[in-house]
Image 1 (cartoon, helix red, strand yellow):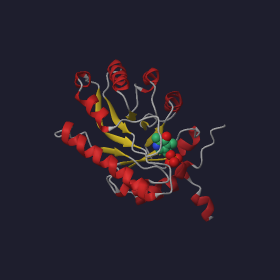
Image 2 (cartoon, protein in one colour):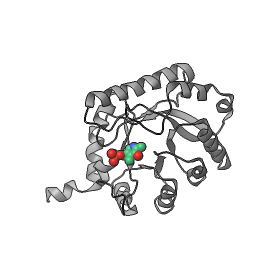
Image 3 (cartoon, helix red, strand yellow):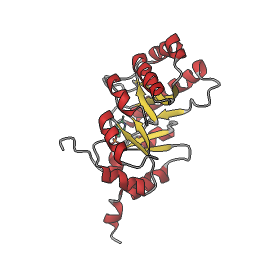
Length: 231
Ligand SMILES: *Cc1c(COP(=O)(O)O)cnc(C)c1O
């Protein structure tokens, strides 16, 4: 068989990445902007966890794809869009406010579900619009409103490193997220067996993220190829 054809196969790329991941690290195949056929191809190769970052795109894809897919929402989520994904989403990676968490709790309740969420932290040294710092997260987790929520479960943290070739900087940012994860566990989640996820690492930096303790890597372009946003 022609090696180039083999290497362009989505299933082979997933298998090759999974082959490099330690057992406790799960792969989220980031399929945003990619067509149904690509996701189906990955699914047919045995993969089940997919990540999307637009609520309506996720809803539309979920409608036509097998219902045993574990859909993760990985991007910034607007409160008025939570209702579109609440009936089925498995994990929301990027919760960055109490108001968003309240809306997720409300929509989860309306669907008689408990939705797992990660708190997103701003770890990159470059400017970023989204993400908490540890003081903000502590305030959220100490609030009465949070304690009253019955339909969400915080299962860990998420962050994105700087988009740079400086691997020392990227490593330091991932170490910072691991520190945040551990200090929140000590303060808020000591007897909580569900609090265990560190979502960090993308196509360009997942090897470093895994070395620094990632449990969920979110990989798109290394599986599905470069994205074309123009369409
Ligand atoms: C797009 C995206 C990814 C995947 O990025 P790649 O560089 O294509 O692997 C991971 N995480 C988030 C939050 C994203 O938006």
